[in-house]
Amino acid sequence: MAGAKSKKNAPVILVTNDDGVMAPGILNLVEAVKGLGKIVVVAPDKPQSGMGHAITIGSPLRLQQVHLSDGMDAWSCTGTPVDCVKLAVDKVLKRKPDLCISGINHGANHSINVIYSGTMSAAIEASIENIPSIGFSLLDYSMEADFTMSRKYARIIVETILKRKPDRHLCLNVNFPAVDDSLVNGIKICRQAYAKFKEDFDERKDPAGRKYYWLSGEFVNYDKGKDTDVWALANNYVSVVPVQFDLTNYVLKSKLEKTFKP
Image (cartoon, rainbow, N blue to C red; front, side, top):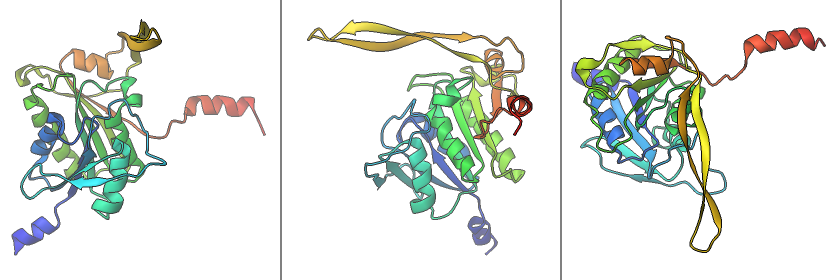
């Protein structure tokens, strides 16, 4: 009887991502949090990297149940990562989960990448809906990436957050360095670095002679602070950046209030 009660009161953990429901990253994230609560997966049916906070308007959305693990509810969604969170809450769970976790993304989501990331947009959408959330990313774009260390630290972070009854708007951007567990120096709470891609569009021609453009460029770190996510990852720390959906610049707001007095 006690076991049944414990299972009934277990936290509900919604798992999503932007690489697709069958991506190795999400399978490893599910494995990392097994036993910490009731796990429900709702994720895109195909890769949605770089979608940011896009939502689907004017086209139907479809959900299809998939098999990821025995006894687990898992669904693929034809929409964006943000669509997945919205549909999960409204149609699959019919309630708000206790925690939403997104990832593990194949590739970095540090610095300015958080703006473009479908992984982090899913987490931010959950935060908007009063659901504590965490986005996880590994600095390895390979589909054959080793997630062993990531699984370990993802579980540590999720366990810690669940025990502390997090603020309903909590949203963490977690990035893992692509190194062996033995080389990790620990978890470091950071700020977002001012670093971005210096972009270039390579101009090419298709077989018909028409021009098209291919985005390329290099990542440049303009921020030399030792309290940033970029610095932490370069020094083999797991970086954790608390983020928020309120984009108000409060320092500038105070200055402008003195300039534009009603």
